[in-house]
Image (tube, rainbow over all chains, first blue to last red; front, top):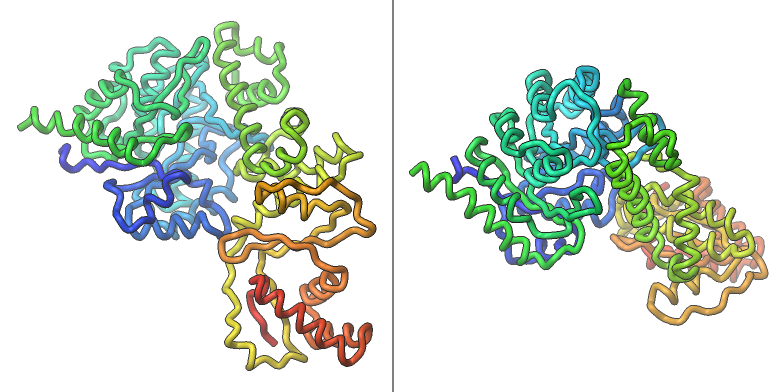
Length: 275
Length: 249
């Protein structure tokens, strides 16, 4: 299955010119932050239209707030629907987290308690989002720095969420590593526990050591233990779209493409073993 | 703790840093709560710095960062898009620096330029169609991003100088408030000060008056020779500045 994997990068402003140059960039897809393009017009949408002519595009959101106890925003969903209609994305994803409650929007991916009540809320919100968008969404496991008393593990929560809503998963391997370190669980148990057949996309990114926690900073190359986890994850999942996110201290595109080659090498290894 | 209560408490923690609220999450949560608080504040500060670079350069880092901290404390974000967070920042500057209207006006210019940058697209008027127009009855439709605002200081030349990395002039109060037009031409946001007469003409056209009516008003004020010439000069400038989307009857 590994030869069916696709490899991509997050499309960020410093690389717009590279992606619009005559020479094609060696990626199978790009991913953009949905909210940056949920706008009326102007250059960003023009860039996205032109990139879309060359590459499949995945839409990755940060503001759906699917864990909000008071529901998801219709206005947000209708704007996202318009973007989906324009882009015809390969995936539409967001996070297993919440950002907004009432009129307050934190613009951060805040943690959820893994309780039956939260599961009911999220499943209802996912159903509404998928109905409005007319498509299946992917949800990403977050990095988290606080855990609450719960009734199940994060991977059990994800499994039930997928079973109840039909949604799929964006497995962020770096987030597994960061959260495992911060909360003291076994990342291998996490990878063994998620519904692997629901994973459609994989994120890779760098992290930093904070005072007491690992922080998901996206400002460094992917760390060695995360590459090891990727190798493990790829032995469980089917064909997936694998990509690297870099949001700060963004290097020249060539450096990210070289990093993506590491992902290609790792993805090729199980296939070689299988052969 | 119910989910709704947990989320309200978490939001209150981020906006107030209340030790009492933090205690509800337990002692073991403290290091993680500090991470979220830092993420929240640094993201909003980054948003304001990115949205108002010229204002920051004009005010100086110390004054700008103090104002940003006050804004973050007083104005929690409410929109789904972080881009909207700076919308009320000029009002924070007005409250903090009532003696420095240039700060408020500069920030309002930057906000409007930013909003024009991602505003609605429109067709560009084709000058080849000028010959077919019945000018007496013509309605001029400006691009949808066009916005007029009023300034009391010389922030337009200050903004232009800072944007061009040149030494800006000293701030002065204008003898009369001045109208500034902000719009997007192709993909670039633009701004320019309008004379009072041009601003009136733009306002009248946006209210639905015909070009003929605007021309007649100018004839009344300036006579048969000057009036049409002034109207023609306005129109020529609007077309060359790409402020016009469509001219129709």
